Image 1 (spheres, rainbow, N blue to C red):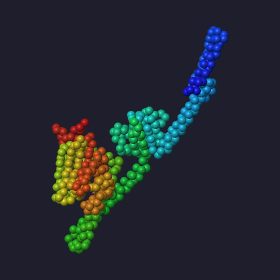
Image 2: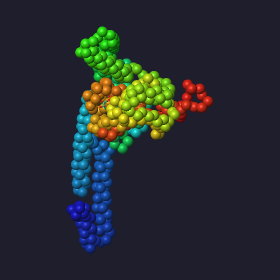
Image 3: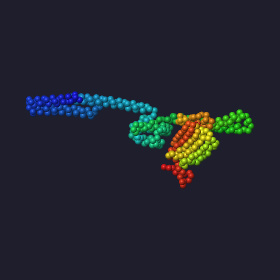
Image 4: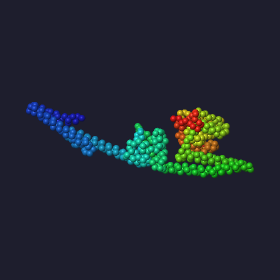
Length: 444
Ligand code: ADP
């Protein structure tokens, strides 16, 4: 700074000193003329340098800053340095951006960056293919104007992004996408799409295989079971050993029949083409009938009770709900020792809830997250002894999913469990006075 002032003031001070000397030797007028003339020359010098700066500022990237003279030399040199640094940083930035774009383009997933109102800010080539976008033309457009599948629009409007959406027939027939929206930053959203067409095909083959095998096994099993029963009740079967063997054969074929039936039920529930057939499910009547079935299954070994705290019905499928609720009741009976208490409840806690509470064995916490996996059993021998297939809770979970309901399990090992199916409020139907039995009002 000191150097700047020294250099800046050197010329005016020298001029002033020289003019004062001139004043003493040649008079005031000559001194004033001399002083003004040199000041004018200095002024033009600075104007010239400013003009140079002005010209350079018109296109600072296309040309180097002028060399400048005196104080200006330093200023221009610093401007040149700043400009070089800026260009270098910009190049690095552009290279980093290009690198990022290349990396995201190479991703095996489609990526779209959206703002909080779902306007497209950027997308990679795979996302262009998946959603039929044009990265150059569609920036700034709302994605739902361009990808209009009702399931996709609904997925975005529901704001529940915990589970990915499986979108079938997206863009071209046969293309299946798994779509997930991830909020990030202040209000940005990342839309990730994955082509799961081949995975779906393999899943379909697997499902069809299980369904076909189960179907094929059904008839021979019924025949074998029939013969075993006939032989078992033959009046001249006196051999104890043969009797016992036939009894065991009968038990095992029945177990296989139950397995085959459960597998068939699961593959039907699993089939994406098998949409939920909705009707009015008269829950109170259904629960009374299930209570009777439970009582005969328990055969007086437990105390079974139904607490009907709500009279509402459901929009759903009666057969599927009967199977799911029936599985929960049968589990409560099978995993509760003699003398235990089982309570079935139908309540409205903001949402309709069916629950089965038992005072049975309970389940240790580490098993609870895995209970709905196929063939997962906490106690294999107890499950087998009581005629379990290991598929019951898997069926319950599928039925719940198809009704957008949640299966909630609360259990205390050694004390008992509560299995609840929590339905969304939109599925509740109220019987309305004045309407005949088949007509119900749907609450808004
Ligand atoms: P399973 O046919 O073996 O009963 P499920 O899928 O119905 O198969 O149940 C899975 C496992 O969860 C069972 O093997 C059992 O260990 C446990 N389970 C289910 N319901 C209960 C219950 N009410 N009390 C204790 N354990 C249970």
